[in-house]
Image 1 (cartoon, rainbow, N blue to C red):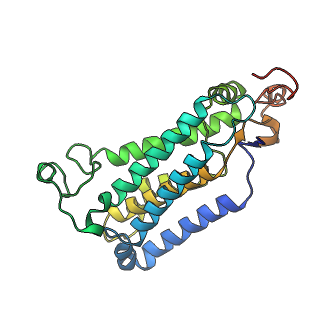
Image 2: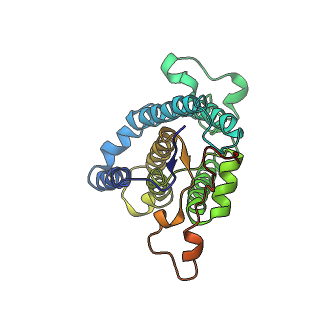
Amino acid sequence: MPTRPLTDTSPWPPLAAFLAAAVAIAWSHAGASSLHDWCREDGPIEAATALAFFGAALLFARRSFDPLPDGCGRARRLLLRGGALLMVLFVGEEISWGQRLFGFATPAPLLELNEQRELNLHNLQGLQQLKYSLLVGTLALLMAASALACLFPSFARAAWRAGVPLVPLAATPWLIVALMQVRHLADHTPLVHRNDAQELGELFFAMGLLAFASHRAYAPVPLRAAVPSPPRGFAARGSVELGGAPPRSATRW
């Protein structure tokens, strides 16, 4: 199966992410009330988030059936399928498992445990206060893994051999913007409700995962291709191919 490098990207993905972020910031300043209407329960922002998660679920599942790239660990298929199931969970949680769409009531045992009296897990007492901390931690972890893979050959090689899918640089701008939305948008814009910024952050997070899922076999690449001007003392290591894969005719990893 042909592979593309983790660092292979064009200016369009980051441009799309930062342009969308600029629109969200301008909207929050110029039309906070209309933005709040879009961020309501089962509104357009929440629907778009659920659709992005659903698209990511389909793409992760599809990728799990692709032939394994040369030298890539067999855990890749299992991890991609686990990612697909996690995306399905995110879809269900985002729409409260269709509760308002289909008009069924919250089971009695959950009514007192759920802060919003809904059929979901992320609003349970004790968990609701942690959910955005978990989101911030997940964003930081995904971006850190992507950066480490581009900078350190040993990390990238180990992940490839283990079959761990890593976020390509093409997807990280969506995650960066998601982190900024969740952490800072409500502090610097006149939003009607602080939760509006969090809903936007969730949308950008979902878009980042959709971008991640849409990139198929992203493999380690020579560091010099990622960083044209490496720091002094780092140039020699930069010329070493991260993947380290032998020719196809030779023994596989």
